Length: 411
Image (cartoon, rainbow, N blue to C red; front, side, top):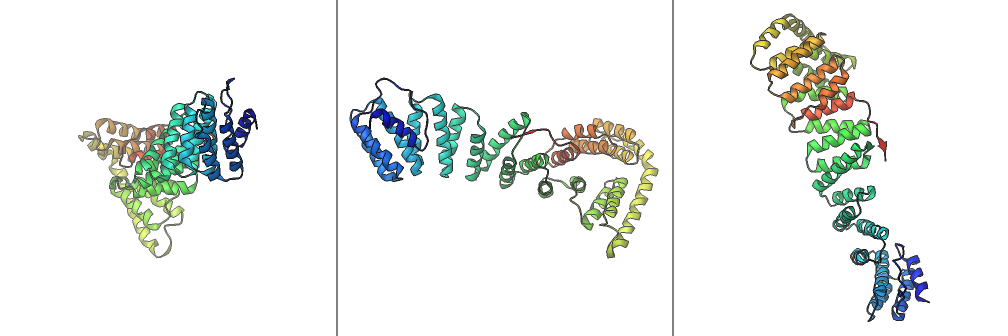
């Protein structure tokens, strides 16, 4: 077999048939090298990898090899090692080929990708991470490589790095108005849950419910909110309200609990509205507990009447208070009683005056705007709510509930 024909045949039978190297007039194989590589090729075709690699080693041991001889030997070594699943030997061979000026730029990029995918397939995830990051540095972003990088970290249970790379990838996709894949978001949620990072897991489930609106994601999302240890007692009513809006409340005790909390908070009309939803859903007013529920409803109705009678005096007193907390409640009650403009104005004044928890106040102001039918204003307000105690998470769920589905291109 001539040297030229051998070169063509080698490329035809290699596991990764890369483009031929840059040719030079003097590029011919030494007879001993060519003979050994022919034997390697035959053994490789027969899947006898031990014999094939021994023949490659024989070719490599020939003294006085030219640069072209060495390059071709390395190509065959890469092919044999790849098919044999010897990731270490294959990677070492590819590194030599990538470093060679004989290898075209496009082929180097293919080799870099092959190193990464080969290591990943072999479940050598640390090596895969190293190869992928090299590819990204030398070639640039690539959706396949990006996915493999996150998966390589995840499969090592390196959750902090999984979260880091996924957040960056997802942010770039959202900025480009592309929908993150469901698998990406699921991996982010699982990694954050493993890290007990409730903020990151809630964010992931918010995005899942945004782009892939399934009940299971809302249920998981709300579960993350319920078990979030950072949620203070002052937010329990708000947790109930978003759960109710999402259809996640169906127990008698939940309706009774939220009603009582609303009354204790000084928002009797809200308590009555919540209780009425329980009756509408036929959760309340049924069975042996119906009389007890009726008694509570009567008490709530009396509290509503009392609050309507005292609200003007409550307003005057709250306006004289040092902080805006009482005034915020007065304004909220005006909104619930149907005087939206007056109530929202008082709530703005309360926030400007200063309140104990500005984020909670903004959350309630946004919900009051929603109650008043000002949905666009409510979304704007809720999007700006911050805080790491649950106010931000609850606000984002309301934004999700109130907003149309995002317009994004599926990948």
